[in-house]
Picture 1 (cartoon, rainbow, N blue to C red):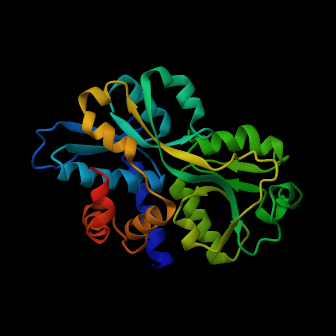
Picture 2 (picture 1 turned 90 degrees about the vertical axis):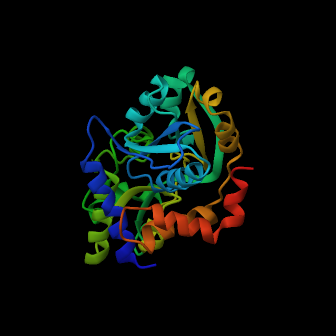
Length: 296
């Protein structure tokens, strides 16, 4: 895998984001046999683990005779759509912290099928050779980072936690917290790396950026970013009745970081486009024993 290809793939998501209308853009499924019904999956803009898992399940379900649409949206639009029944599910709900507010707001109209990965973690990352190792040191050294902390989408749980807990908790009010998009954050991370500048960004594990950049996580001694979380599948209330076998498959779905990283690397590392179908098909062929367990 090359850093150049990984960055190009990540920044290609900016093109998708630019097509957003009212917060969402759909990629229509093309299953030849849609006799089992059409399933709409909400995919959070810029969250690569969710994109990878959604593309995997799109391929798996279409092979089983379902039609699958992926709708790219910011979290607020995604949860609103699922609660209203406009979308069927999302595979990228982080609990118990990151997306807790959305679950509290829409919980009566959502069904949590449980976590498929329990190794997720919110982070604040800096360049590997930065002269600090902890969030407790960032305020005193803010000038070394241009007094800037670079975030992602303003509606994301990561930004909410950073604004509400991390910034006041570690006295970072004097830093400018820049929020825009994940591709914009990655662009800034790339530029700082190329220029040999210090940079501080909001990030999360699992993410391919840890393979692409020489970065490290700042220690979070007060635990304000939370402990490791689970990545959950959340559906509309009527989903299990309409698609019982798919609900069973998704409830049993498990994918550890090693497997997830290999899929992300295939999609965002060795490949520099945004038509993931052939890439995912090859990954499935290379991991057939695992993939076959998903629909048993």
